[in-house]
Image (cartoon, rainbow, N blue to C red; front, top):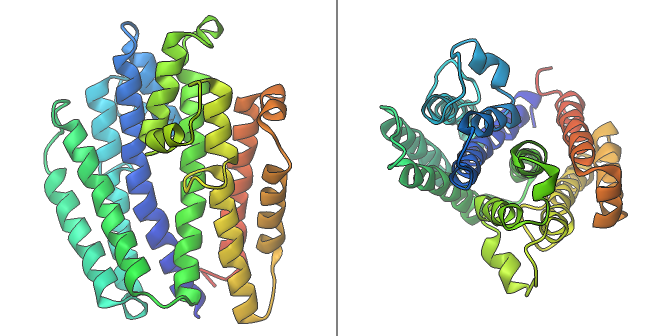
Length: 313
């Protein structure tokens, strides 16, 4: 496959995943803000920081408030990571690689772009926010369904999956971090009812609340939820599941092309490190420090894949 086509597929599905993940991050911030009665600007600044856009946001706005942060993350055309911008980028990449896609996948992406345009044509009121965020997530699910239901399991599918799960791992890590490092107001709240409510909110934001309860987890504790989101191989949004899927699809590419690259070794090392950890050692190291290192390694992996498969060569 041409590197340009591989890159188009990789980034198409990264952008689609990012749209859904941004919606989930906004939901996490919105729900957590409801549990806090004071200093709402801190919550929304932390959401913008976690999304990696706080500096650019501050160039346009003097303060962090719900209305402006939500609008910037969902609609702002100057924010290249807004839902509007990344959905447009996904559609542009889909057009670039259209001959590699089934008609169902192309139609789903194109319809998603038109739906998002309509949803975000005007500022979203807080009363409408849950409905809009649900719709954004549904559009992503429709495209994934078309991919799984109609695409051959070949290198085209592998690059799509790798893009999806590298982006998903980054998102889950950032959502954990926005809760534990920036949104928790004080160490005195750890283990409190407020702490537990916020962890429950994080589970809901990654569609994992019911799954956590199904597993008969007794307590909504920081250790229990963090273990589930980081180390549980059954959860499709956990860090270990995302890395295992990335390694699996990279190995399919190695088999198909008959060669391995630096990205294969790096991904396998990341997965090995996760499998060798338990939640106690992660908390001893510091959850924020662990998550920061994971995000950096995951970013490096994405860059390696781009170089090794010559996306821009």
